[in-house]
Image (cartoon, rainbow, N blue to C red):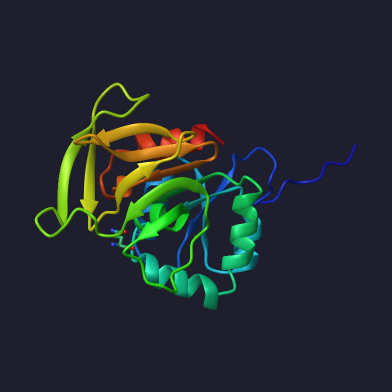
Length: 203
Ligand code: GLN
């Protein structure tokens, strides 16, 4: 009986391939957290790379710049389509802004994916709290999660369908609707992989 060798990269047996949008911002740290968890990750900069992945992380950075680069790279429309079809997504900080249905203090030409019914105000924590760190109680986690906020979006409204997983001073900072989870902070900037693990477990 002849046998066919299974080549490196053979898809069978691996878990989902998690994309990380890598146009701008803190994408490398997300890739490190995914790698630490043993998850397969793929930097996404082109529509061809997007087609490979089963889920996507939208990193922090600058949402206006990402919006522009999403358009010039030709990724915006195919990505919007994949997200509308239910591809799981984990958006952090600027990634949260890209997923929100309503963005206050955005640039007029800034585009987003209209994916989760929240209103966010860009840089809404104001100058005093431009950047800060705090421990959050997160639904589903036994111990608090140390969260780093950097010029974070401030969630001013959440729709009735949206599940609030964590709040800071009563303001939602980690929310989910179906396959879309978004954080106002940067879970990739500490070594704590629990939120990435939660995302992978949901796939
Ligand atoms: N203020 C940034 C924006 O508007 C987000 C900040 C961040 O991702 N750390 O996109």
